[in-house]
Image (cartoon, rainbow, N blue to C red):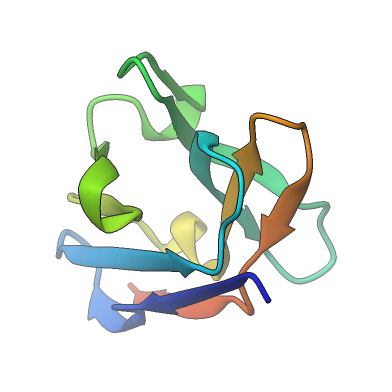
Length: 116
């Protein structure tokens, strides 16, 4: 059974930093892409950042220059370093992974709250 376990969310003041981690277990096929999405109340889930096996990264315009995604392939772990956090970054953050057979999985979500 595939499991994605996220950690690192919490409450932080504007301008502060948080680091999210997501460990994937139970994968049978190789992981192609890993990433982070977020969903704020009343809004659709949106891509924050993702990283391919070769290291190519994609970021939402709203987080470029502030967030950094990285991946430890050997540990099936993806990280999201979030700096200069803003109140509008408040959301539930979800880890996502896509296997090479195109099957994808989601974590349970971790709350990030940025106070002004």
